[in-house]
Length: 157
Image 1 (cartoon, one colour):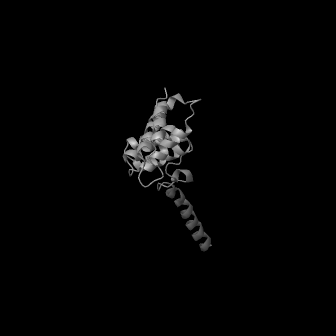
Image 2: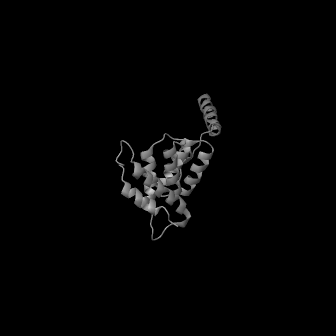
Image 3: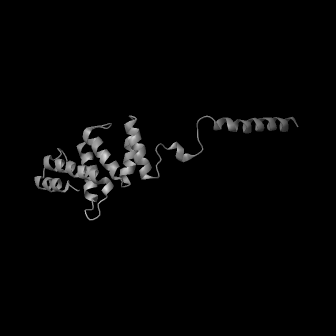
């Protein structure tokens, strides 16, 4: 009888401590433990820009990369700009070129997205400059003819 009573007390103490563990800051939702678990590219774009304005470049790059990989033009342009200028990230012309070039490659002159026309136009100029000068130690070699073509396309009005 004493043994049952002891197990009953120990059992009730153990179960009684369960709710206390729930208030330790941990969460039972596994997706909440993953930082910047985005399911919507537009949400990631907004979060990335907010993080950048708040000075959190690491979080910004993660969010913007998700958005860019999901086809958000503004995220591609912003990442290209960040890498070109070394804004919150280590300056890397090749990464900048790739983000800008994604915009150029995806541009559809028959059905342009008017909301992003200035972003795409700036990307044409940026890729044109990289093609004009090349990027040292990379596959991007100086190509003045391509640069000229890109500069002509940059006026997308």
